[in-house]
Each structure stands twice: as C-alpha cells, then as structure tokens.
Amino acid sequence: RRFLVTYFTRNQDFPLGIDLSQHNASWDSNRLPDFDQIREHQPKVRFIAMRTGISWGYRDCMFERFFAEASRIGVCRLPYHVVYPRTSPIRQMESFLSILKGVDLEKVRLVLDLELDQGKSRAEITAMVQACLRWLKSSTGRYPILYSRAMWVNEHLAVEDLPRVDWWLAQYIRSYDTPNYTPEYPCPPMLPRGVKAWLIHQTSQRAPAIGGVGHYMDYNRWNGSLAELREYFGETNPLPALCPLDA
Image 1 (cartoon, rainbow, N blue to C red):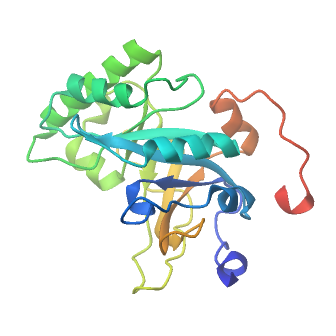
Image 2: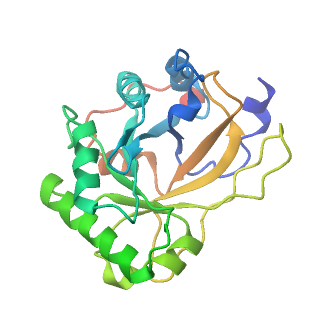
C-alpha cells in the first residue's frame, strides 16, 4: 500500500507500537487484525497494548485473542484497563487481574487508562489512583504505567501525591477529515506538571490500520532504543538475525 511508503515520515528514531481494543475487530468479532501482517510490517511493530476491560463489570471480548496473537508473533505486550473514578478501586483492580488469570505478569507491563473524571474532584481522583497503585504494587510487585494526557492530568490529578511511575501520554495533531489519515504528532508529548519524563507517546489515533481490519489505528512511540524497550520488558533472548529492511 502506498501509505507504507509515504506515511512514516516522523518519529523514526522511536520504536513503533499500536494499541487495540474490540473496536479494532469487525462488529461481529469474527474478523480481527492479521497479526502476521503486523509482524511483517515495516517499520516493525515492537509493542502492542491491548484493552482488558473497563471498571469491574466489563471485559473486552477481544482481549484473549489479541493477547494470544501478540504473544505468538513475539512483540512486547501491555494489557491496559480503563478506570472509573466513581467505582471501588480495589474491585476494579481485582477485575483487572482476574482477566489476566494465567498470564505471566513478569512478561508483560500493566497499564491504567486514566481519561474519565465522572464528576469527581481532583482529590478524590488522586486518592482513587493512589489506591489502585498500592494494590497493584502489592499484588504484582511493581507499579503499572499510567496512560493519560497532560491537560487531563493537570486538571484531575495531584502528581506530587503519587509515587514515581512511568507515563504513557497521548498528544495528537488535529484530525484530518475522514477518510484521510492524520500524521503522527512529533515526539515528545507535552508533559503534565510534576512529570519529568515520558515512556510512551500515543502519537496518532487516525493512523493507517495495520493488519487489514478497519481504516484507522492508534500509533505509539517508545522513548528509547529497541534494546532499552526489550530490557524494560525483561527480554533477554537475542533478536533473530535481521535483514536490512528490518533493522
């Protein structure tokens, strides 16, 4: 496809990732992105985030299939869970880990998706996030990554009251008219007040879909080298020999 040649003109120095939910499958869930196409894509997709669910009562129906396919093609994996401020943090985190039953948590990195305020105050949302972080640290041995955007964090979170965590931050270019693709926002993203560094930048929500289902897909960039990405995920096995186009 022509976009494979012309679209990827920004952020080439940052490893590419995508994030998926049931919205990236067909309406009847019978068709999902072709992960063999994802594996062969140039530039290489190095990590995939997949939605597990929302709050405590909703499971993404595509998570297990996406996770199995992402594992099969050997990319780094980030299960992410959308958090509701008005709901018990412990109940939500128990649901998160119940969806991940059987997953080796040493081989993945968890993410909390923070985008909703639901009428709660800054202090209430901060306390909810603190509780989620404490529970996951106690249950898994490490804090999750926090996904959000600078403007939301500045309004709804007291970063100074949180432990030190890694941040996945969204910042896009204003979307072009459908069906046009919107270029990636050049790294780095805007940092929220009190945040000193970014780990992942979600650079576009209207990038070309990789894998043949749907028209758009979210793209992400890793702040570091491929070696640093693999180290973060505890990957110690050497990469297979690369052809020139795969470097």
